[in-house]
Each structure stands twice: as structure tokens, then as C-alpha cells.
Image (tube, rainbow, N blue to C red; front, side, top):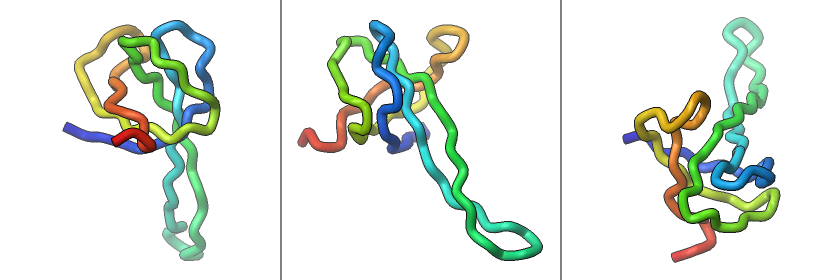
Length: 79
């Protein structure tokens, strides 16, 4: 089961959160590092409220809808 950490970029929808995950890659020829950003649609079954910029952890599940393939584990600031 894959899990990722990212920051909330949209919280407008009812049971869905959109999060951004930043990764760094290295150019094959020039060896310079550059940052890539990918957005994930995450299922939020309990409709918890998150502010933009909150760090969350989420894991991969079976497809829930057309775009949602991830489910919220917990916010990173909760124990």
C-alpha cells in the first residue's frame, strides 16, 4: 500500500480534497535538480475541514470515482 504526504491545495468540494505533492528530479544530462508538482484527488469520508496549506498523509485504494484513487489517513499534525 503506497502512501504519500502532501499539502492541501483545494478544499471546496464536499468529500474530496485536492493535495499537491512536490518531488525533486535530476536532469539526466545536466544533473540539475528541479521540482515537479503533482495533484491528487483524495477521498475525505468524514468531511473533515482542512485549510489550504495543511500537511496530510494519504494512501492508495481502489478507484472510488473517475479521479479519486486515494483516501485520507490523517493530518500530519494529529497524533
